[in-house]
Each structure stands twice: as C-alpha cells, then as structure tokens.
Image (cartoon, rainbow, N blue to C red; front, side, top):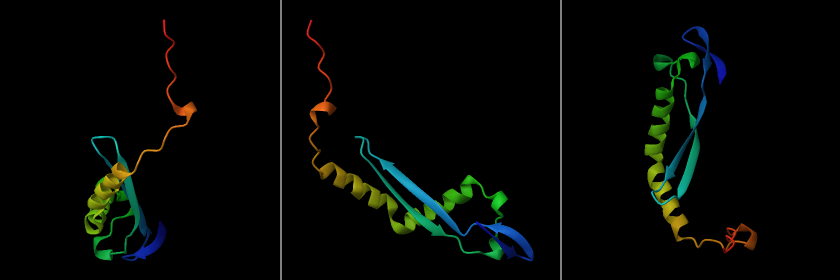
Length: 101
C-alpha cells in the first residue's frame, strides 16, 4: 500500500494484492498456488483502502484464477501427487503396537 494522489486527494492505494487458492481432493490430497496481483490505479473506478472489502479482493483473485487456469493447474498437481510413490516410514514413525492381553 502506498499513498498517492487520486482525483486531487491523497489516498491509500493498493498496488499489489497477494492471492492464493487451495484445492483439496475427496481422498485427502491438496495443492496450493498463489500470485501477486498488480492493481493498477484507475481513478474512475477507485476504491479507497478503507472501503476495500472481502468481495473486492475475492473478485480480483477469482479473475486471476480464471485467467491463469489455477483450478486446472491445482487438479494436475493433485493428480501428480497421487502418482508419486509414498515414502517408506521410519520405524519411529510407525504406530505403536498395542500390547497383547
């Protein structure tokens, strides 16, 4: 955030917004992607920093997610995770055996 002149007044301006998206599959795999979104100053459609709400931020993030194909990319990351072999556990990572009665 910086302070810039907008329509003759000094205003707090968001120049960059960081947005992220997480996908979780039904079988427990997940993937995450994020990006810094440039927010060029548009004096005709200016929203002051104090008036920015979740809907504004989500709209910016959703537009970038659609433009960059995030949903498809996250699906591919999850598919790739499913295809990777699971590493073997060390002995200390295995669940302890219950003593027999």
